[in-house]
Amino acid sequence: MKVALFFALIFIAAVCLGGRSAQADTGLPPLQTVQKVDLKRYLGQWYEIARYPNRFQKGCLESSAIYTLRDDGDIEVLNRCKDSGDGKQRQSKGHAWVVDSASNAKLKVSFFWPFRGDYWIIELGREYEYAVIGTPNRKYFWILSRTRTMDDTLYAAILQRAKQQGFDPALVVRQKYPPGGVLR
Figure 1 (cartoon, rainbow, N blue to C red):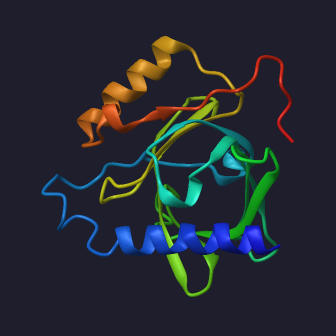
Figure 2: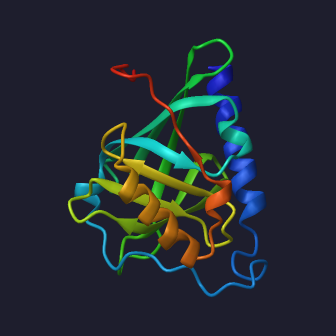
Figure 3: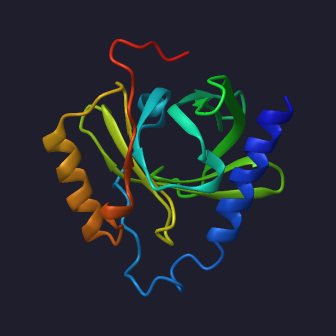
């Protein structure tokens, strides 16, 4: 429980401190999101393919997230990873909600009230087989997939499109999963 709480607090502090003036600090044009997200299709299991390094995921391997619909229409978030030091599972529960109902592509996420951070869906596979998440200040970036692997050509194309949005592909760290390994 202490590990989960610590993990959540670090995440929230990092996102909140990094997200203060989302566009003012970057000098970049506004971050573009996908036009429309069907949240029911978006729910379920996602595996992290790659991310920008960040403090709240330091030492996390084999990261995954499960999104489920709450009774109030918001989304429950369960993030999990394997600790690189002791191999134990770390997890953190959070709450996400839509802040742009026209597209459903801009969300806020909170793992510890009252702190919250941006979660913008900037790219989405036609069949919801992958998603690319970023923050408007370009400090946080994730590539997610419904499977633990991603085709190298697709991965390179995603990085190229992310670069056009102001993200630095050189900062992206690709996840490594054990062959045939099972994520728990």
